[in-house]
Amino acid sequence: MSTTQAAQPTSTLKLGVFWLYVLIPLAWGVVNTLLQAMKLFS
Amino acid sequence: MSSITEPRSNPGSAPFFSKQATVAGPGFSRWMVPPAALAVHLCIGQAYAFSVFNGPLTKVIGITQSAPDDWSLTTLGWIFSLAIVCLGLSAAFGGKWLERVGPRRTMFTAACCFGGGFLVSALGVWMHQIVLLYLGYGVIGGIGLGLGYVSPVSTLIRWFPDRRGMATGMAIMGFGGGAMIAAPLSVALMNHFHSATSNGVSETFVVLGIAYFISMSIGALAIRVPAPDWKPAGWTPPVTNQNKMISRNHVHIDQALKTPQFYLIWLVLFLNVTAGIGILGQASVMIQESFKSTVTAAAAAGFVGLLSLFNMGGRFVWASASDWIGRKNTYFIFFALGAVLYYFVPGFAASGQIALFVLAYCVILSMYGGGFATVPAYLADMFGTAFVGGIHGRLLTAWAAAGVAGPVLVNYIRAYEVAHGVAKADAYTMTVHIMAVLLVVGFVCNLLVKRVDEKHHMSDAQLKSGQ
Image 1: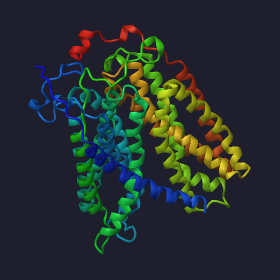
Image 2: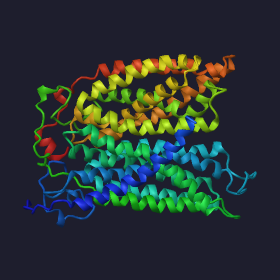
Image 3: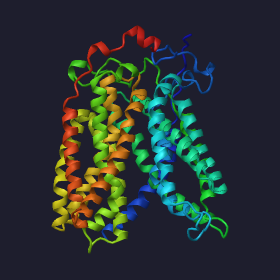
Image 4: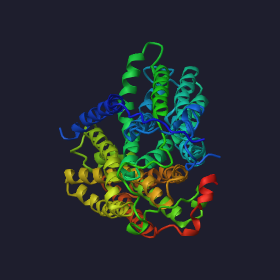
């Protein structure tokens, strides 16, 4: 059964929050690792 | 059986976890899909950080130091090995199921298995029953790893037909980055829960199990598949003649296994991973032995961290670059540049050029990560997108095989060299030269990859029925 659906554009806020949800922990991990990597140069 | 070509029915009337319910409506932004994939891959990437538990797990009874009844490192080593084997097997066998039931059910199953595996392991630590750790993290968690790894990849490829490499690179970059979150988080949690009667591992497993279940479930809830007739605005599928290596036809999973291309790409992945994985495991020892008076243990840990960053970054950068230069050319670069760098690395060590030594390994590890991230798009180019998730799952057996072959090659050759009087600083020369040869073999395998013969293509009727 095919139906026609009305367009429901994704909210920019929802999109931004979802990206932050994954990028904040990733950035935290990267910064931690970068700090550890700096020991190689000290 | 449902297939990707079925007409869109009203998703609201379909069961929540069904494939139909995940079909995106008009106006849905495809940029919601990469974070959904990352939510899963950032969790399962924890696997690379499991070694932070090895020390504490040898002191579960003794708390501050190992007691006679505590587990040995050899006993504990099987947990990770089992997890990797189960990852390969579940990806291989679960891939076909994924194509049938869709990404949401598969991702949620992965969340249950990965989170549940931690909880069973926590019980195992609390009861001091190693079998429960093998079953929990090793088998159940390993199944979660495999299903979680493959489930969002094919969906991303379908959402980003114009930038397949970049899309899969984003998700698989998450797998590389997951350990960077998990390692400091696990250490902080163990310190928090440490007491006179517990070293905090059991409690940490419970917290991680619940957190990973929730995070992966959010990814599963957010994932959507595109409608069969959907394509990016303003994008038209490339004409086959423009790029002979990108097929517009589809090959069934079972049929893909009958093509030489599948085995050649299997070898391409196997050789690329073998050349990197052994070095990754030995990086700390290797740099300390190569620059004995210069590099301390702390600096060596920094080297390992740097390699992890390049491993993660390479996944996104190389996979994205493959959208422009082509998958085959990307692997040509991996194999040619990798072989050259491996050939010169012993010279850098012998002449004390630490900067060049570090740079060479950073580039090598970026290509190791890039190999993982580029291969799903390579498969989609060769076999079409209809069953790419299942085909990718079966190809991941190459990873499991390389996970055994790589460390064995590095460790045993080094041990053989040292036993025959070679200085420790020089013991890696033979190993890295063998790695260079493996990469040359990989170059030849990649060279032999041609378009899939038309006789393997699915007809429209087959594609509709999903058979």
